[in-house]
Length: 130
Length: 130
Length: 130
Length: 130
Image (cartoon, rainbow over all chains, first blue to last red):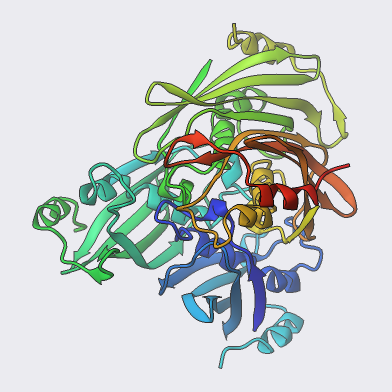
């Protein structure tokens, strides 16, 4: 599991007084930074391979400004050319958001999906949800 | 169906050169403005009733800067206290994003879900997906 | 003057119940789309030339969700390689935000600022603030 | 000086391949969280007092995805009812953004600016730019 600590921002709240629902995808993506690095050690966009195809988010509880949150990122399923993640956002020892996100490993130049590299696959297995 | 025209912004693109995936939820929420108004004619946050509980988004095609998009918002299912929407984002006559979003009609003061008002229900029926 | 109509989004409000201050730069940039097109007819990022060097914003009045705003964009000063804009955001017939933004016309490949092309200069003159 | 470490997000980049200019105000505001807390220990929006009136930002160098940035926040000038900050964003030991931001200490209920409280003033003096 990857853990990412995030400090909520005033700009991420909305008129209801808590964090706006559209911020959850932003934080979940922020939680994938270490994972993105596996595919692309120097974080270059030129060689970017991970293309998102689905995101399914349950909003369980409101998240508030003023207290840090933790994004938890697990690998749920490693396919041949795809990768499914299970992710949660926690605040105050409560799970506030949970969801699954699916990526395809894609060669943008050739416009073809490509098998996940063996060394990445090995690393991903260390972060599986169980 | 509600239609909302949106002009993509430079700030909504990302290093891959197209609109970042986290912008889709923002545009879909923007497409619900007319619907929010049904519950809350003066757009006051004090009386806000619609609380999001789930969002499921398929990313079908990349969206680019430089050409307007259209958000299309249908009512998929009207429950007793809940509402499910089916939504699409179109660019260049192509459906690029589609998804379903579920809301609960919630009284924040009493902390209880409440039945959708009859007059709102009547209006929602005009926008059903078929 | 360029005019751009923008419909405020729930995600752009903050816990104080109005539009968050960090949204003003986003809307002002959105208001420059037609101007960006002068330099780059096909909106390609590969050939992007306008690099922002300063932004100075006065927040005059709060902006609220529920009513459209208009961004007004004037050319304030045309330099040899630079361009200064004067911009306002209006809601309810009131000027809520005003500011100046300075760009440099920059060749990113050669890493050098370049004179503004004559035909662009001609077009910019039509939008001067007076 | 207040220091805030921020990890850039993919969603904060733009089509030019670096962090979009509209993200700087977001990060600068994030860097003010400890300062906001002085006025409002429980981070409640109901009692929020700090209203932004001006922001002036110099964009000195591009900021990239893949490496943390540090926001540095100094108190520049303590007025009777106003507060001016001087702020910088650093990456790779380089100052990439610098700016000044002015707030008014405002009672939203009474719609009047109010003197900065003495104990806040004392604390602010510890963070002055020199």
